[in-house]
Length: 135
Image (cartoon, rainbow, N blue to C red):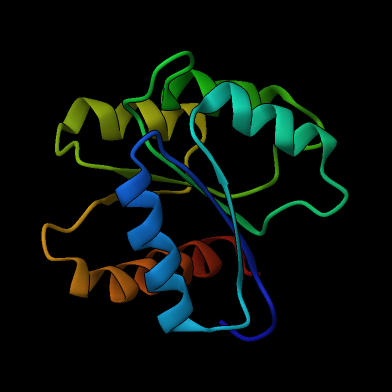
């Protein structure tokens, strides 16, 4: 994962956002993390952004606009559609994986129960996406 990356976390749980930021700092202190609490806020930020994130980590279960709805909107937007979206959820349901894959998610990451494993899981997700996209 060379070079500076911007990662966006979209999650209504402030503790999950905290653990995500902490994990990213462990991976590379130079990486930037932007945050949104739900899909509507994420879309608003993304559409106004001067610099788009390299990856969006998107929770599924959120108020106002859930992750599936947000993913669908991202993939319809010409400015945003090429940003890899990594689903970041507690869900282990096969149907969630299938639906988000059809909607254009690049990877499905189930949140680890032990947050000490989170940095490795984030690296694995990004490496897998880079392998698939060739970036």
